[in-house]
Length: 215
Image (spheres, rainbow, N blue to C red):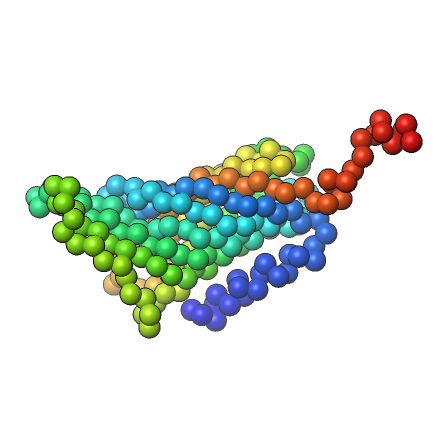
């Protein structure tokens, strides 16, 4: 698994030299669950958590481009046991690197687009809390030092709206590792992402056409 994810760690270095690349902060909120089994199967209530990082967009064709988006994302679950009157909250923090293909539905800049992504992730923190009738019965952080299986591979699909200087995207992603027929639970997150692209220095220094004529 580590060898599989190594190329993702160096991907941001490849975009710096691309002259047409645009980039900016990417922030959002996710609704997470740990599936009971199978793809896109919701379990319990949504666990709300933040996500944030940086996005690079590299043009490929007239309507397609690559997205490289290192980020921190919150996963986990929120489940209820009515018989015991308990709520169990699981929060899992991951460092992830999605590499996505973005396809615009029209050749003109901006507008609706679709994305498909593969995602490498590394589990860095977590916490589990159990409450009964509002009282905390159990509260413990996960101890990850020396833990096995912290790497995770995921896939994602998204639908968004590009407004030129910024973009919104709704993306659903689900883990696909460990590759096991026994361990069925997987992390799934439905997230609302917002990216604000920072103008390049050349764009900021552009003079108004009227000013150039006066000169």
